[in-house]
Length: 266
Ligand SMILES: [Zn+2]
Image (cartoon, rainbow, N blue to C red):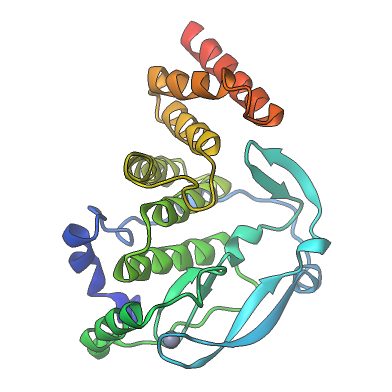
């Protein structure tokens, strides 16, 4: 069903640090939130397409991008901006619908000769299942999630950093949260936590552009959501006592500490 990457999952499981089948879970249909419908015209005005060349198979592809200046911020959900009527996260992954290669949009064109060779080899290996994927210009959260999963799979073939994998997993968990799918939000929060923890222990800062304090904050958020409050408090205190961390992040850390205190008191 997922075409060219069908056989990749098993390969990736052991050798590439993805000990789970990321396409195995199903969407929790009943949990989708009913919001006020926004017209297609409004949505279409927020995006535009640009033709680019796939750095792996050299096909010409239409890449959909967001007109960020037109987005209206609703509020910040800690480190994540939430916009009115629009979810730009659905467009964060650029994907070649011809060969299945996908990556976060800023990383899409960064492919070394060796990575290209590895990706092409996987493409050839899976040629029997080849089935180009088609996405509409306006994408919803489910399509967004699917594209992140392609980015995760091909990212493993590319052997991208643990930090980059953790970012993909984090964004998948955020999109599941937007859909109100608690089971998958929890599952991908756990995966994001595992991979970011490995990155924290083995990679140098900044980890995929994130400062040490930002990583501490994300790990604290994951731990809180997963119910491991003592771990969360350890990371939060590292942020709160560090005078070099910006005030906003320290305030967010204090808020989370308070939130944990309230949960523990209940
Ligand atoms: Zn391609």
